[in-house]
Length: 455
Image 1 (cartoon, rainbow, N blue to C red):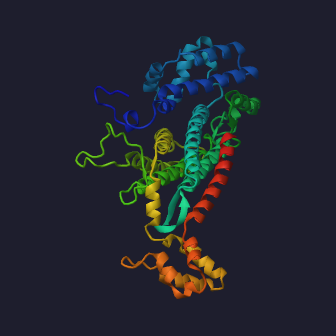
Image 2 (image 1 turned 180 degrees about the horizontal axis):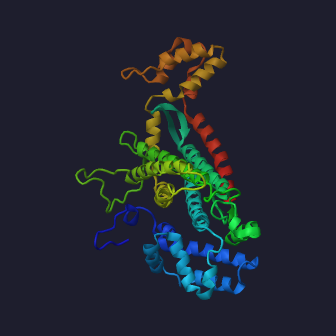
Image 3 (image 1 turned 90 degrees about the vertical axis):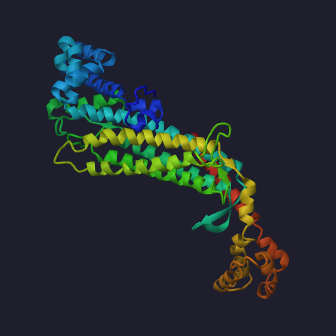
């Protein structure tokens, strides 16, 4: 977005988020959703004989076109100081004599919460596509590097060998769990209401249940079975906390790239445009993982946005307004930023530079120490108590920078020599068996997850 005067304030307007996703939350789009709900209400009431059918036709035509403008709504709101009443008045003005039937029996939140449910549907479709694309990229990496040896690390230390492909399969599985959660959540989220001031539907008389069912049917939504004046805010809190879970996974993936790109490890590098990109204003050699760091930063903010909706679950009696202002900030920001960091994760992993040679060097750095577990299991199978085998190898594998490699120390150890031949020791310290196991499991995970992706 251009800003010739340099007056834009919110970074979402000029730095973060895709224009098409920001557009979901534009004031114009939100107005159109509210008008769509008003039209559905009029048409439902006409079907039930509550208002003239001709009036509903006129109202729907005025609502669905561009007759009601944002400028007019803004002008009315400046006088009325009520956003929904401004929409109602503007629609009534454009509906002529039929305008007296606009908003018949409804309260403001019937319109805003139902329009919000439509917004959630659109946002969920975007986020689901993001998760699908990210899972697909991770699965491609998992398949490509299914048998690429890499040392596993726990507590930041070498653990046992795995494959880089298995690491990517783990990430893909987590991402698809979030997609599954979204699919489970959406029916609880795409919920509106047309039930009046405190949720009983009294203003619609004997037609209350039928009106609500007809409106929601037209809009492709379900009705909240027991609202107050508001749709239950537990639904929104569940959504923003789901986003917080997604943000946790996003930062976990980005942190892995950042750590493995450290100079001392140098196993990965996120995409870097060598022709033009600058890493530092003073250190010309720098190739910083800035996109992954950006993901981490925005993910932390999205997790923080999960708190206000939890607070909004507490309302005074059937409704207060303490939720309204922060929802206007939290919901669009959370979705736009989540889409932004998910798309960045797709770009990073699609262009990831994987240094398999460096992974092999790092795995070999401890001279076979990453395979001590294999030796311990073999000794136990040969009759040594597991605790004794563990202690024997704990002592044997203590770091000795000036001594021989672990494999040589193991072959020379009298206790091991009585139970294992030198060839067996070398075989047990070979990481290929562990890497092959990781590759086989990666294949199983990839097959299952690709089947899930296709569904």
